[in-house]
Length: 111
Image 1 (cartoon, rainbow, N blue to C red):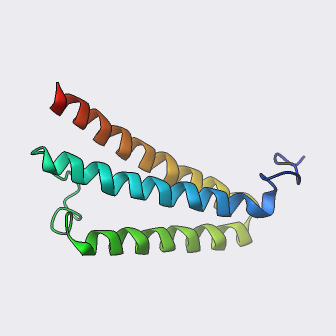
Image 2 (image 1 turned 120 degrees about the vertical axis):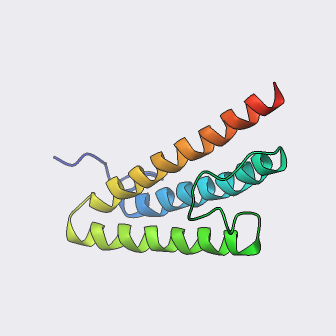
């Protein structure tokens, strides 16, 4: 049984593209919210990203990470149906938590 129907804007062949757009949107939200937290005196919690946050390299690394995630999703999707979809959903969920944490930090800083 097929979980996703082949009709409308959520047609299966476009699903990876839509999830990719969602993940890059979360990356942009992460960059913006992280910069806002840093401006209010917060700190980057990821020790690998701490040296580059706030520089132009930060955006380059995020775009490269997105390209890596998309390549991985396409590869997994070719190996097994919906594996790439599940992978991107996991990546998206992780970055949702990152952005939510940043928003929570901003809320606490403004209180």
